[in-house]
Amino acid sequence: MKIKIKNMAITAALAAILLTIVIIFYVRSPVLIVTEESFLDLYSKKRVTREALIASALLFRQVKTVTVANDAGYDIVPVAVLDASSRPYCVIFPLRFARSAKLLNEQNPKITVIILEGMYQENERPVETAIGSNTSNFFIYKTDLNADFFDAGRASSVIDGGKNGNVIVFTDKNIVLARENFLRGLSSRGNLLETRFFTSFSQYAETSNLSCIVLAGSGTDIFDKKLGVPVILFSWINPLFLPMDTVLVIDDSPWVQARQAVLMAMEGKKSGYIKSKFHFLDKKKLNGRLLR
Image (tube, rainbow, N blue to C red; front, top):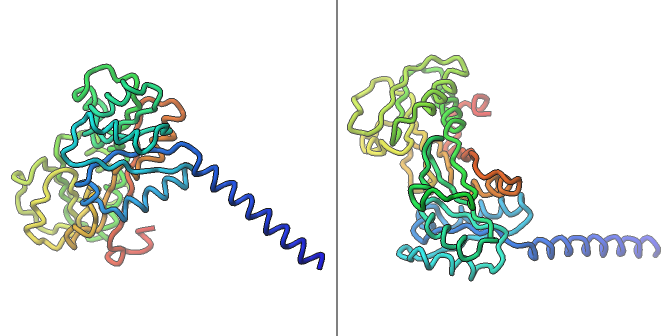
């Protein structure tokens, strides 16, 4: 009888602790991520929910998505943000919402505002272009192009699988340092693959013995050629919408970057770089040992 009472007491104590944790989790001010309806359609609401749950668990506070209409004016967005929470822990804006981020900060200077610039080089300042040079009130983070391209180079080497073929890389601009990191990653496993870089599909000429194609902002027209070559794609788009040749997606969406962005803001880092998340879509095409 005593053992039964003891077990019931332990169960009740554990339940009370669990309930306390849950209450604390929901009482804490949330992290808000701003996006529009069309983005959710392309990214998929299921993926948003999954990534938000992961970020929420890691940050131990709710990560909520604030969805606005595609044609919503920049002055409407702060209203939607405050409707979602009158006291958010911080608000994360993709670069395209920079004017809305500025307005929210002007109206509510105590709210921490984070702007994710995306794939821009170190010397580029797209936020300043959008809202002016006074950006001291914001936490501004870029996608870590150098780290992402290095890992994409390593992935290209793995995908090649020892065929020692050719790799072609399409970028939307002349990202010199990122190119260097891609080549470092490619050669890190000892593969000496011939690599050609293009900034548009119009520059592309037929290349024989292709082992991998990398698309980082341009060159998607190559899918029309149906080459049957594994593709690495820098994109946040829902993998279900991608051609079958896509084997790896490099995702720098706000939900993927939310945890690191919030942690850096907590540390007071006004700027920095955040790595993307690598999603292998078809592991059957890759050697398991090499993939690990």
